[in-house]
Length: 338
Image (cartoon, rainbow, N blue to C red; front, side, top):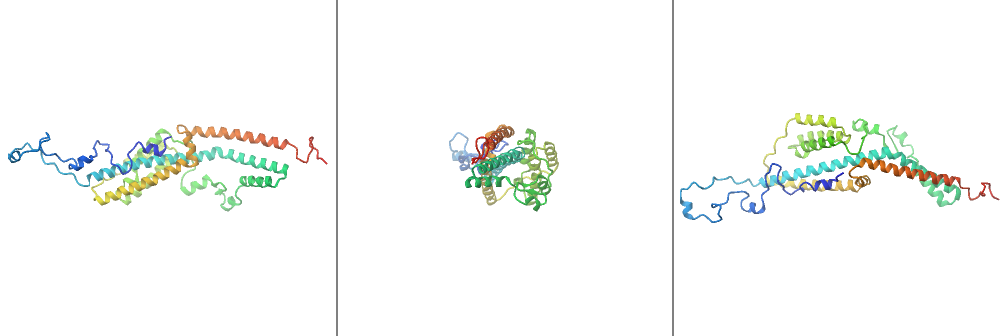
């Protein structure tokens, strides 16, 4: 799995103009100083034209070329920054969905094992406290049991919507209008990933020309994200057809320089915000676990499950040994001493 920072390193950084996909080149500083693409004077040999040559009615001079608009380079910089930001946001959203899927599957598959380990730890602490009678052991046993016990009266208070661990899936589905369909794997299929990226590039809200179009795009992207989080490739294909059948976004017209500079500043701020989000995802508990097995995150769940099963077996053996030991007040045969 590639993290957002790694994917972003393959695209242009926000705020820096890059060559467009159509092959147009960004003028160099020297070219800008010379007129940003205007035709040089002279015949190309590097010598200045003589006054006599200027006076001759000669039509060998190249045709006048219109000077580029002052905003042209700035517009190219804005387009490059927009594309770089969109690619980075797609990378962050892709990673976020994998983290969320891994978190849900981690809780679904491994939650019972963690619960069993907590129960065994509580029973071991209680057995030890019962044998020693030490106040410190009794305190530790009470703390271990408190970690196992559910939050009191939460389920009754919320009428079956949630317990001490949070909302039930059915309740979450009612609040979000989404069906109860937990993900089958951490990373959706390659087809779903390809469809998701194509739709995100075409329908990204940052490409909107006005506020009404932005709202339409945001609603559409919300549906795309929901389908991708479930790995629903057929629904993503339907959404791709729906978008293709809709009206094409109008091309961006010329903008004043002040507006273009403000746009670049907003893109840079958005990039900084996404960088913080990506860092939080990568440094979080689930993100750190995903980085252990970037190529096969689903297999990591099976490996963790094997480790937890081994820990459960160790705890059960330790508890059995502890229960088999006689109390300090009992003799070797189990009889109570004088």
